[in-house]
Image 1: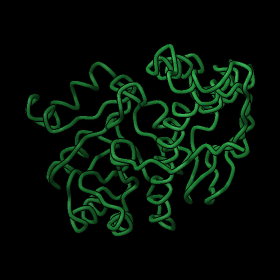
Image 2: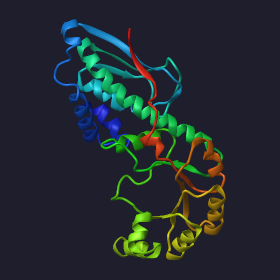
Image 3: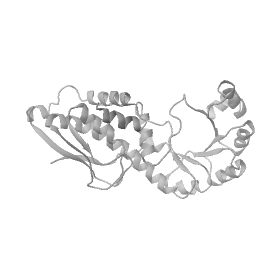
Image 4: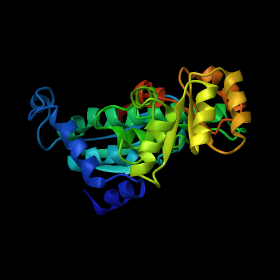
Length: 285
């Protein structure tokens, strides 16, 4: 990996070695020999082309795609930055090198770039939908195994904010925790006894649970599957004493109605578990 690529990944909050290992794993899935390209092209044959957007949206994963080409000794030149809005036909990355290598890199680079750009584009649609309110769009742990850091990075590129990265950096008391512990109070106090300064969020299904969470000292509350009217009442009850996050069954059509209730965040698992790929293709010159 070049120092420039390593720096770009680090600046994005990504661990260069982790991304490199992920790319290597993806490339290895194609096996040792490309039985289509090897008979057609001689080792000295070269090709050049452009990765172009075929739709309108937001790109994410440019340095990741560049790393794919870099690892196969294909020259590349990024034409856009992560988070940029792009139009159909716009060149994202130009590449050149041994034809066999360009074709080996093509699908892996596109798999990563189209997936991450799809997440960024979806996030931007949600962020635009709540523009003008105080609400922010937030992701969840509903991510693909091994891709969480990249997927959450793509959410950030699209204008969203990240929730906890894993089970290690913040606590989220959910319904099963409450059922097993006996109550919101017992679950919350058990965590506070071990981790007095940890960020703790409490998932509440009812307004009564919201009141209990406030009484025990919770400063972050997840409103799970509540109606807009219930969320507006929760905002009134909390009166600024805790951050409120709407979750469960949210749709883009409903996003603004939820935002205007006064909640601070909308949790959208679909950003990462169901994002459509953003259409990008590699066209040879």
